[in-house]
Length: 164
Image (cartoon, rainbow, N blue to C red; front, side, top):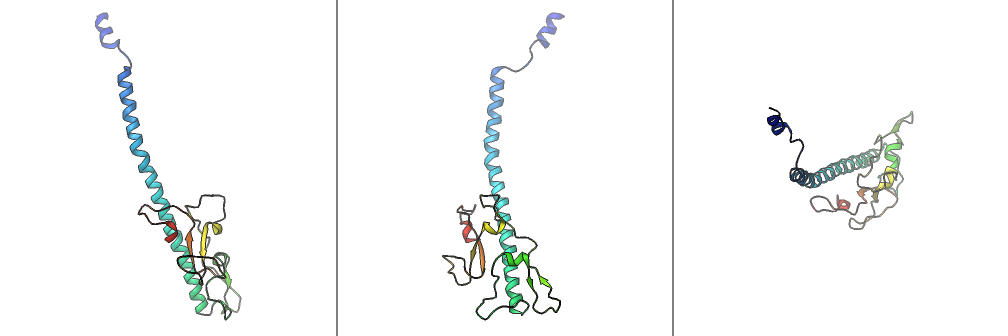
């Protein structure tokens, strides 16, 4: 009986070959999972960038509309676009309100998810284009007509983030 017990229960653990095969399978699965995870993270950041650009651009358009409607006092030589991105979340005085109420276009300014320095202020993570600058060579000026990403990287579809 003991001889049979030793034969049945005496072999415990894995052989070296079984362990190596298991490790090889795990390594193969890991090499397949890592690129998929990186792609998923990049897609999420791209979605955040799309949302941030849309939010800021809608706020800029709302500011321009309010200026066109006379709610924001502008000088004759001004375009009606915000003088800086901070005007969108710090607010401007409503020129039509006798109580001098403030108009806010953003609660907070979103940051560019592709900006490498995480300690930078959100306002510093965006490139700003003035109304007077060319589309191909955006530059800052006395107003903010549009924003763009400062990232030199390209998207999954091959377009540079700067052109979004």
